[in-house]
Amino acid sequence: MPQIIDGKAISAQIKEELQRKVAMLKKTQKTEICLAVIQVGSDPASTVYVGNKKKACAYIGIESLAYELPEETTQEELLALIDALNHNDKVNGILVQLPLPDQIHEDEVIRAIDPKKDVDGFHPQSVGALCIGQPGFVSCTPAGIIQLLKRSGIKIAGKECVVIGRSNIVGKPMALLLIRENATVTVAHSRTEDLKEVTKRADILVVAVGKPKMITREYVKEGAVVIDVGIHRNEDNKLCGDVDYDDVAPVCSAITPVPGGVGPMTIAMLMHNCVEAGTVRLE
Ligand code: NDP
Image 1: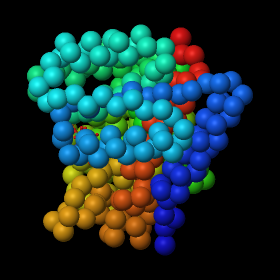
Image 2: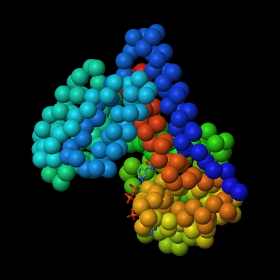
Image 3: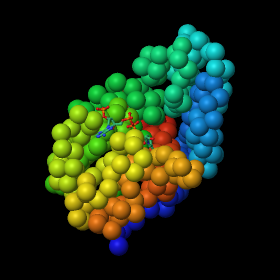
């Protein structure tokens, strides 16, 4: 049977480490860390995500300021709030929950956040820094996957890694992080010819395709490590990933389950970025 990569346990470990670090910072340096969380509208999924982020802040000892804005908020109003938070010295991190209502341009909002407070790692300056190997915030889901691999004792350097998906928040930063870890990286997407041939080369296969259970054992090399980023609800309202877990698990050496794999790591890494924002100067 494969090693089951336990994202719940690893994320709990990271959150405990952060809790100790925050307590120490408060005691020795009188440093308080504060995250501003902005939600526009009341999309139920966003409300759950925002609630989980606030809970994680409380657990770690980070103050969270919640801004719940109405659905009809204009772009100017949102940008004005971000500007005020950029200039508020008490606030270390700013997070705008996506998606935003149609009248607001996501790209402009992301660009308006001061890169020093960009704890989601979505600002073009953060992405550019990652690309050229300079300090900056890294998108939380791919950063969490690197932690999952390292803390599960899986070697990345020198390995053949294939990432399925090239989105700005998962696929592309994932590929850049794997390169930073000295892997040989291929990025596959919807225009890739003969996807199975490409994915079967992978020692580590990261699947962020956004299609429930698409990846079956025909896509996986015997003994590969399989990381499933996908989150979906199946017909029985149960969570499942982009990987057909029951089919793939018997042929791989390690695999992340859904739920309990990549999912919990995203919030843990957001908390990590908040603590960094409060302690490290990114110039
Ligand atoms: P996107 O829909 O933005 O990207 C999907 C990518 O998969 C695209 O690059 C697309 O290619 C590619 N793709 C689609 N169909 C195929 C196909 N048949 N063959 C090969 N490639 C294909 O998704 P995200 O990156 O935002 O998210 C991916 C998954 O991860 C989703 O299930 C999402 O819910 C989940 N997710 C989970 C998170 C977590 O915390 N666990 C966080 C973020 C996302 P192209 O570019 O050519 O269109």
